[in-house]
Length: 445
View (cartoon, rainbow, N blue to C red):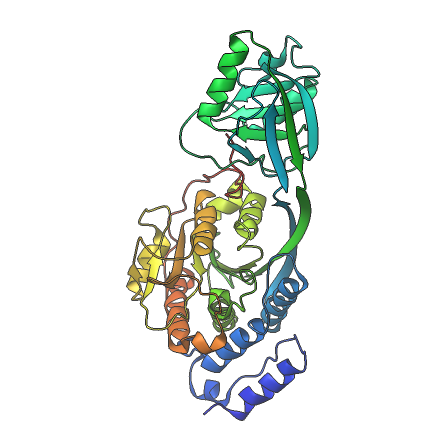
């Protein structure tokens, strides 16, 4: 039976209160905080977050971020609401290529994310790989330029075509497999651009090289590019004494996918993060503990990418272990730890010692993407999740296994203690590797 305090908290949340209530259950007085995970707090955190869907860059996602920040503040942490912006793209409603010389020909046309709208009719000319040197002869001015994939990013090909005075651009594939056709972001200078398959591009280029006339029309209409803003929540606690100069990070994400309530993905991860923070709030530590709740993870891991890109090389080097927690409340599953980059790093070793089995086949695309983004920035990272589970459509609080969340919380807390306890020596610091990251939709070539 749940305590009177739990129902009182639920009643206040139902009235719209978003601020956390920093009371301690009577059982805390009988047990040491570091050995006790408050399942009622875990429940209340998930319940608060799962009251509504939290799609990226929405008011409900922002409300979830504020809830996380206020809870961390109530435990005594210094917090930061860290905004970041990114762009989303709605595909065009009209995307076509027609040729006067081939009136009945059907071309395998596709688009590029963040391409602009426009219609252009002109002679089609070959412009090699679309580099500055390929446009140097001014032959593309007023024409539709045909360029081959490769060597430079798609966005740079578009910029060069626009700078050379072309009215549109066709980029044809140099290989049979598909491509992640994106310009990466809206461009400062651009022309309408479409993509062609290898076979169609080869046919079109051959006709041009045979000096036969080619006049075409490129149409791109109905595309919409929107600038979005989301937020990461960052909280930290510096060492009491004997500072090792190192950082251990615990992270999760507070947004949810689409219209899902996101109780397990990822209310469970945020609940674990907050309960770990409560337990660590007054511990003697010699290593900085940092908690990061990411926004817009379900929109291409935008939050982790923005966070990692903002870190200096020195900050990345100081981060010796990161634990990313997602989907740890799945029923009838095993708790596992995985490193998407595949190496046996420190957080994986610490989790194994805490009783969590390593696995190389676990996690949702969002969880793997977020953990991979941190790992690619040179931060040793482990994804803590449930094995063999995919994200469900409903994902309601009724489907959550509270014992699983408590088990994951205890395991990560145990791993963190190994790093932060003043009786343990500092771990070796790695090298400040990793570079600027891009969302998975932002392919370069």
